[in-house]
Length: 264
Ligand code: NAD
Image (cartoon, rainbow, N blue to C red; front, side):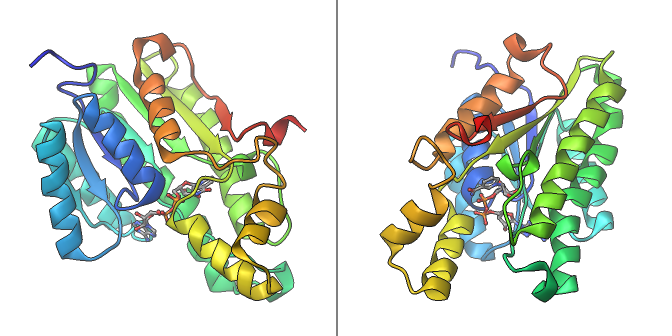
């Protein structure tokens, strides 16, 4: 088989049992990277996914169920990947949850969970993965922020705070690794049709007694000038670009992929 762009690289993608993370994992695997999947879900379904991906992309695929709320589990996951593959060459911090509520009704525990899963877990994965990247003088860190890392919407206080935090973390790490061949960038998607967004559509339909079409057009895509959802596959291609030699001088950016939302 012809050598693919990411042959001999290993990518660890948090929250890759679903949605954008799974799309990223598929894109990186299709370019030849070995894959460490992570995320919640039914163990049998995950085992089937591991086997299916390994066969489809002819790469090694393993799964680690580390909970992104647990720093020890995060560190152990990265160490396990390094033991097996030598290094985590490509780290995609993608795991995330959402909760929508006016701040005065927002449960404190939900806020803590959003901050810890969407932001603090990135701190621990990066902390654990960087030494091996530095040793080999190559690494790619891609953090899934959001258009909500650049601008706010009401009722998403914890999420917007976490995603602005991801943008800040990205810039800081970029500066710390700038002299090595390591880059740290954030991708800021607008609305992407994934299980996370599907859940929000259902919630909004109930909350406002609206049809699915009304919720999609009048609530979600109202902010997105393209008037279409971003596709998971588009984000996979963006990740591949950020891992390519052409992107070696792109460091510390927060790249909007949101149909023009933040241009307004
Ligand atoms: P999703 O719900 O489809 O997937 C989230 C993943 O995170 C799943 O694999 C889930 O198992 C995992 N996860 C959740 N809690 C976890 C925990 N405690 N430990 C380990 N894994 C955990 O969501 P998605 O839409 O694919 O979102 C992925 C990322 O992209 C998130 O960070 C989200 O904020 C961001 N994002 C999504 C959109 C969108 O429109 N879907 C837009 C902008 C940014």
